[in-house]
Structure formats: structure tokens, C-alpha cells
Image 1 (cartoon, helix red, strand yellow):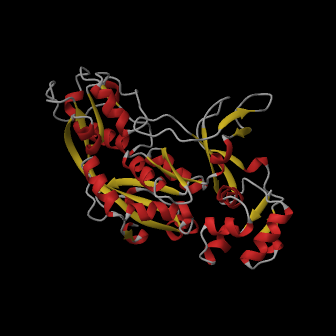
Image 2 (cartoon, one colour):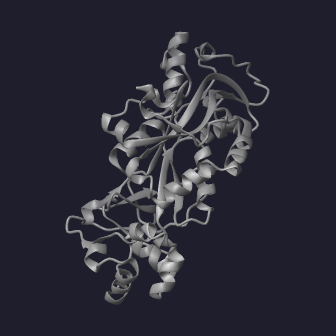
Image 3 (cartoon, one colour):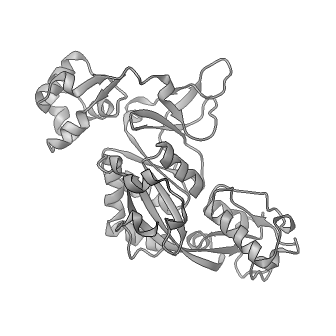
Length: 368
């Protein structure tokens, strides 16, 4: 495999992909595939690139003997034959994210997976694509709020060079992805000033840029009109009201446990305490469908699903972006969309989101 500096040299020359493609006589899709590392140019194309970019072939392309199949990282659930995935290049590794079907999330145009290996354990995927489309570089943003799906849609439709994929992941999982280097951006939320409650390694505090997404309220979601008269966590002690929970590591799960503790209610007394769903929208859908009587989620999903909402606390969400990713096209598309009036207007009407400081840089050290 080859590492290449085509994108960096092209951007340094302030040359769009279309111009470089025209000057060396190939399609823009070919340039995109070369830059993403999914295609190796012929000798003639490599020589033309060197001439146009003002660098030697050796300066542009370097063999990477240490990059092997072991550098294909599968982030998340075990893969099976035919699973859809999104494939991203992050820090010189191929990172494979399952393209899970989540409510409110667009199904990405992504390659399938064919699992090889005698055990069929999903650890050695061979990606089978759909022509040129699978060569488009993907940018990954991990977090649990549905607002990230809206942000990814705005960024992907901005006519940029990258497609942005929202990986629905709770706070704990998104943080681990950031630590492992398997996401470009992690959206972390928490009470008051936000992600100060998230324990971050010192190296991330000094190597990340933090950008504000939005502020919101986290609280109880119940059916319209609150027909069961739910008030607070003490109402769960009887075991008559069924709850829909979030997995361990989710901020909503931690908040529920805090509320139960303050009310003197043991988890064993709560009906359906062990039943968990993947995200805020799934909580609202469970309540709306009558599968649960109450759950904890952000105010925006309650509004979107026409449910009643009982606030518990104010929260904010910030995007943590490693400095090394800040100049990547997909991250720049995200930041440009985040700062746009169009996105802020759309987000404020998508749900109960405070967008007064959306897109502003935040001091990473201010809360630690």
C-alpha cells in the first residue's frame, strides 16, 4: 500500500480536485480515489501528478510496508456477510464502521461486506463497492444526539469533497472512539458547561479543538397529556410504570441512576430497567408506541414526536476534534455547516436546541 501527499500538495496550491483532474487528464473521481488511498495511480498518472504539483514522485508517494490487513480496524459490532459498512481512512488506517439502521438516519451509500476467514468471525472484511461512489472519502462523527444526523446531512450536501457519516454512539462509546483514533470527531455532552464531566486523558486535552454544537434540556419523556400523571423518579418505585433505558456509558443512563438514587428507588424496583435502546429518538419511539411509559431523552426528540417533556437539567454538547484532523476536507465541511446561518436556523426548528453559541470555539482546558 502507498501513503500519498496528493491532497496536501493540491490544497497547498489552492487547486480544486476538478482542476487537477483536468490538468492530468483523468476524472475527478479518480483524483478522489487516489487521495483517499483506495486507488493506486499508474506510472504515467504519477508522473503527471508530480509535474503539476511540483514535487517528485518519491515525495508524493511512499510505500508503507507496515500497513497491512492488520491495519483494517472494525469499529463496533461483529460483521456478517452482506452487512453495509462505511469505510474511512483515519491516521493511515482503514476504519470500518457498521452502517447501522438507526431511526432518523439516512441509509448511506456504502459498500457491502464479504466476510472471509475460516471462523467467519467478521474480523477480516473484504469490501465490495458500487463503482466510483465507494471511492468518496468518508468523515466520521460519533455521538448520540439526533442533531448530529442533521449536521451530517448539511455537511454532506455542501458540495464538498467528503461524505459525512453520523455514527450513533453514546457518550462513553464516542469518547473511546476518540481515544482509539477511529472517529474524526466525537460529540460529548453533559450538564452545565458540558463535557467537563467527561474524564479525558491529558493527551486529548492538549491535542483536541473543542467546538460548541448546541445546548438543550435532558428530562423525562411521557405520552402526550401525561395520562399516568408521572412526576419524578419516586413514581417508579411501585414498579407499575415501565421505563425504557439507555446502555451503560450513556449520559441519560447515568442521569436516571442519579435520579433513582436521590429518590431512594433501587433499580430492581423499576419495571423494564434492563431494557435498553440505542439513542434518544429510540427512547421517544418506545414511549410513543406504548412499549414504555417513560424514558429520559433530550427535549428535541419529545417535541419532534409530539410527546410531553418534564425537564431535569440543562446540558450542552461540544465537538472534540483532534488537531491533526482539523484541516481535512470533511471536517472543514462540518465546521462550515456548523457555523452557517442555514444550519443554525434548521437546528433551532428541529427541536428545543439553543444555538446562541453554535460553532464557537471553546477552551478545552476551561473545565479541567
